[in-house]
Amino acid sequence: MNNKYNKRDQFKSPSSITGQAIFLAMALVLLISVTVFLVFNSGRTVNEKINLVNAADAAAYSGAQIAARQLNFMAYTNRAMVANEVAIGHMLSFQMELDIVTQSLGQIAEAFAALFSWFPILGDLLGEVAEITSDSLALLAQMGRVVTGLYATAVDSNNAFYSSLQYEAFKDFAYPQEGTTLIEAAMSKVVDNYEIRQTAPIMLNDESVLTYFASTGEGKVQEAALAANSMHASFCQMMLFVRPDGSGTGSTGDGNQMASFCQNLADGESSVSGSPDSPMSDNGEILEMLRATVSGFGNAEWIRDRNSNYRFFSFNIRRTGSTDIVYDGLTGQLNWVSAGDNLRVGDPIFNIALHNISASGDAATMSQDAATTLDDSLIDALTSVGVCSMEDDDDPETLQCNNLMTRRYNSIRRYAYLNPDAATPVVTAFLSQQNCSDNVGVDEEGNKKAGWHDDLTHLGRHREFCNKTVYAVSQARVFFQRPPCSGNSCQFGFTSRDASGLEFTEQANLFNPFWQVRLQ
Figure (cartoon, helix red, strand yellow):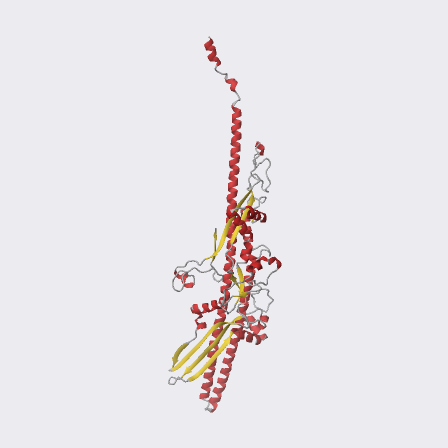
């Protein structure tokens, strides 16, 4: 009996364990809730970090694209000014040919009249015809010189407009104290598109953030903060402004004071060497480029060489002449000069000059002479063909007819040049944003919904998730590289080989629009 009693006593009644499992279930639910909360908020943090990193990459790349476009704009306008100058050389060369032709035809008419001068009536008639013809041809040549002078003046005005555009473009992306620069504006616009909620804005290159990481950061983070702080000054110092010179000695840009200029912009500093208001000597850079353009392109043959020899009914005819761009040290200006234009006709036996005509001139003189010969009727004619305008127009590209009497051809007076003392800068996007910046747990107006918690306080845990700040840094470099060419594109100057056929690396410059961007 005792044994049976002991065995029965080993078993508990089912009612004695009722309700004990609920405590285990509650603990498990609490653990699962905390785990789900941690996983959920960790996922939010990761997504926000990815969004911030994408925003940093897009902002840096967009800002660098703006910088590259501005540098390419400088190159395009420099090339346009060179093309305009070469066009003036073309115009002057055609005028020399017109002078030669009109003089030749006039002398031929006079010689023909003299040949029949012994006929009483016919001689007088031919003499009058020859005189009218000679005067008409002389007038035609004179009108051509006026047109050439006015053309040089108009093109020169266009170059002055391009120079002013370069100055404005320089200020747009390099002057931080005159409003938001284009680089900043582009970066800010991109960052705004990545903001999910207005109550949690993304801060771009915030001064306090940059100061903190520049002093306490390490490695690349500290370097990026320092680069962001000096970004505006770096782009400002990247270029300088120069004027034509003919010396050809020294290196262009040596001794420029653009660092001082960019540092003192807030104080109105504008007269240091290399600044827009005080361009320095280019040591013959633009002069060499103009001559290289004339000598290297087939359509400029009429400028560089008008020499030819041919025979007409056994008469030896020799045509000589050329046009060159020269630097006038007295005026400090470039000028297109045509000297040595000559047409000589020699007899077939002794080659004695039977007919010899010369012509000469320069763009500056023709521009001045054209201004002094203008009158109301000629101005009206120029207005009707659209050469100039009589209406009040603030557009600096529009040439005012009344200004033709006072304007002169002065050639290029100022253009942008790459500063040899400045390194190629980078665009830095240093972004910061408060955590939990998504739309989870907020209404359409960005206010937190009632009963929503971003932390574990209501679970008895003091674990905050949304009182932290996340950061993202990205940098993009602006660099110069001539693109490779193949096929027909190599026939238009886009080649990576020199005259001997060897590969070469072109130095960065503001004459070829090959500025590109890459993320670092």
